[in-house]
Length: 123
Image (tube, rainbow, N blue to C red; front, side, top):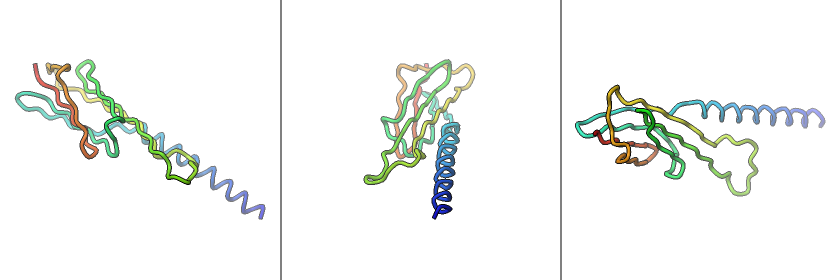
């Protein structure tokens, strides 16, 4: 019996560390993004799977679009959280082409099915 409880205790410690390590890896992974351009505006597209509008912050600073996604999903009713592995905190930063001139005040963003699109009209 004693070995079973030690084994269970070691197993719980290993699972806890793995969950924390996986969370840190997720947090350090930048959001993948594309920059597109037409005659009137730039379009920056980020993959943000599972994100909802309240999870996303978008900004424009020094010629770059900056995005932060922070989400945490509640555990299943009736279950106890052993380690938080579904929290997500990701950053993305994309530089626009050199010399790009945009009207940041007229920028708009939309989030549809885990894809964030940021539209920046040209000046």
